[in-house]
Length: 282
Image (cartoon, helix red, strand yellow):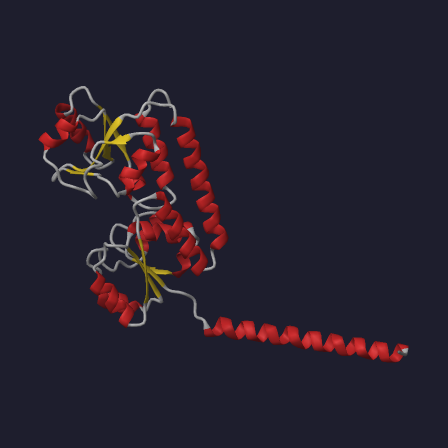
């Protein structure tokens, strides 16, 4: 082949390659224009926190009541509680996706959203594995897979460290009291129950499911070594009452959000619980 023919073929190849690149650029641009940015509404405080943890806050248009972390979440419109969200307000905001807690928001309300062409994603929140699964699903859907993997990796490494550190410790009998009136505690299949297990303790109310309301006499008979109560306003008086009821028992205060919300901060709750129940060994 002559030099002139080779040069001509090369130029032709460059032109074809340039044309294909230009075509790809236009196709990607068209796809971006045809796919509007997602608009997310969260119907649970911990799911709100998940959105921020994945750096998706620019897509969050409204939240449920008690979505108070991070603080900037409190500036967003509120669409009611996770139990009874305001459907009309949600429809008015035209979200593309609504995030809900499995078993919390009534199914018929979520079905109403789906009938209006709104995607509904429901997530369980009973164990650390549920947190991983939620992060993975949201990360994959909203192009934050790498961030999700990083958060999951960090949680797994920290939990493994805690379990290794406490594996040889004696397992104290622990009670987590959620509410004082009515007297509500954390039973099996709850995040606080899993926190006790991961921190190296025994949940004395594990024979009950969910968050049962029990009589004081029942709890006294269960005879815990340690009682955990959530951090609240006016807690000094509550601690006094608790000490009068649980004479000689160890009573500690831990942020309730760290033990009950299925977010990456759950590891902070498990860490705090481990330090309290294994004091001074930890």
